[in-house]
Length: 387
Image (cartoon, rainbow, N blue to C red):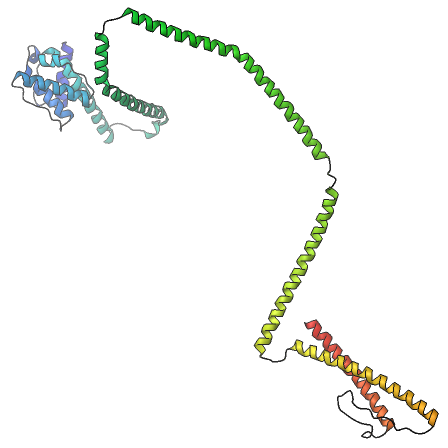
């Protein structure tokens, strides 16, 4: 024990707030009650919730107390204490207790410094603090934490096998050394090593042959690749014989498809128009449709035209017959009666006023019929356009 250590210990205990004054003469001789009291106060100062037996009346109790304090500081503060020196309770025990007081004193000083900075006694400049310089420390701390976890788990597994390994180790140590067996094992190891060496040498010798084989395969593949590329270029440059026919058929197919589309659209349109007409006829309940009326008018006009043509041919035959009869017999033959008219009424020649007036009436009727025919044709054409 040095004077400086004892002085530092007393000053640090006074700064930490130990209620009792400690003199330098207290540790000239062994003083276990004082050492136990100081240790108890330091442990409670470090962790108020600690559970350490405080009974130091008998020797066994003192030993248990010292062991518990040393174990507590080793687990909580990672401070290793010499239990033998603590049990002696003299100046050497001060060297062990100063380890605990130093940690507590430094923590107290840092706390006081931070409190002074909060109250403004020191100038704090947040802009001067460089966080980038601490990133490397943070990465290193994370790496060390992961390594500690891995090593701790491996150590736990190894310690779990310690019970088995201890028995095996003791049995191996207890066995007498047999030189013959050792020599046999050594020779076996030498032989296996030599076999591995020979295998390695053979592999090294075969490397050149393997390399040559691989090079030959590579050259073969390259030649095949070049040949296939040339063949591909020749096939691309040559035009097939059936290509012209194919292009012509393709054009014809396009034209046929266009006509097919047009006819299909027309057919669909006509079917739709037919459906609409049927629906309209059903909705009209038998009422005449303009399209049906136009169709009927067209049919009537055609019938009228056919009737006129038949009437004209019959008149010519009658005139030729009359002239022939006059020349031969030279007598008057009554004119045959004409039945029917363009208006659809039944009339005879007796009802008319004479031959001359009948012919004039017929001419007028023919002209009127031609006008009606033209009007009917115009109506039919208009109806077709509307359809």
